[in-house]
Amino acid sequence: MEGVPGSSKMQPEIFHKKPEESREERKRAKGESKSETRGTFACGFCPLNEHFDYKGTKPPFARQLLYLEDCYIMKDPFSPLNQGETLVLGADCSFCKTAVCLGCSIFYTKRFCKKCALAHIKDLPKQLHKKIIDLSKDEKDVT
Image (cartoon, rainbow, N blue to C red; front, side):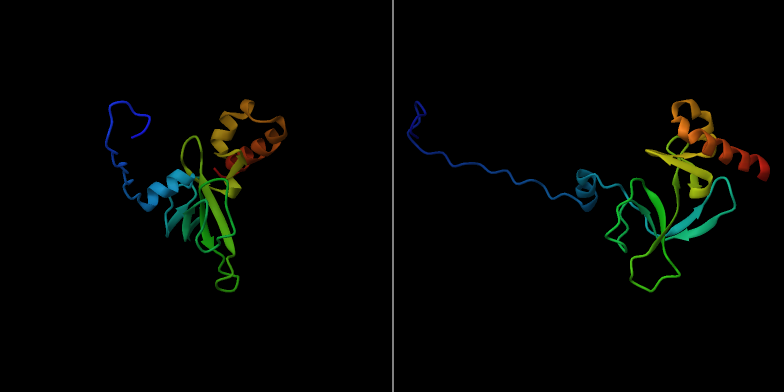
């Protein structure tokens, strides 16, 4: 090899083949979250209890959609089949991890259930305080 002292023979290059990645590893590398398919969503605060078709950010039956959080999603039963219409039932609270519907929670960069939102109200923008207080009032009216 030219330029390498003491080397008169060419040495073969060694290529290392990367091991095959699993589908889940590829998803994690792309930033996609784990997903669940089919189950029952039950809100931790109200009586909403409904089946879901997908939990995650990118439902396979609505490929044009990408949600900002892992949502419990169902195919819209009122739209024509294979149209990609969805209904978001809810998501998990980012603090307590309780499954919570959209009516019992607030989304501000992350999902907060009404109890966690009230507990952390001072950390959230003042524009949301009225909505958080109204959510908390609804809970007191139910109990």
